[in-house]
Image (tube, rainbow, N blue to C red; front, side):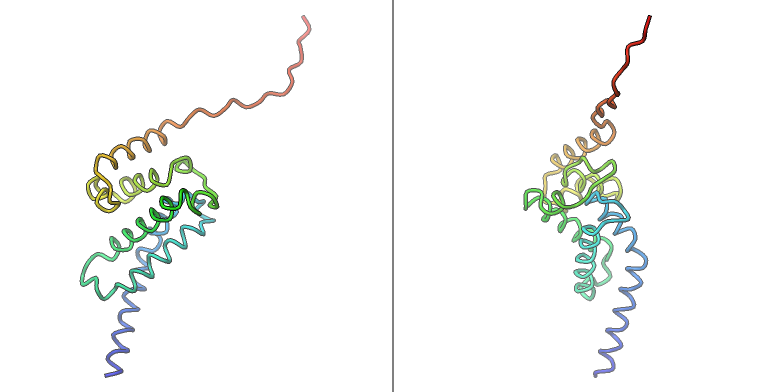
Length: 167
């Protein structure tokens, strides 16, 4: 009985490794977009992904032919939402170094925008995933798109002292 159990565990581990090899990079990119960290310095995104992958591995046998990517993405989004929203900004807002076009967005705006545009999830599915009304998801999405497409103007660069030109 023991060798069969060991071979089943080895098969499970190989399947999971193949899944991570295929989907890990995209999931890390998604997590990095959520946190708005620089792609080369994204400790919060990596932690989110590690937790999501650990949860997927723990649930691997219960997926029964389900989509492990959707399962991992769902956990990643919910974990990010809980960390960012329920702690009034939490560590993702206060400690993470953000940059890029998504940095000025709130965590909720980034989450909705990334799920809708980068992941291609429909409005109704995004609403169900986040436990929000579809109208709220639509409003947050449009506000985020407006902020990304029309960022506020930056202040004009300061000019040194101007010397009077003799006439």
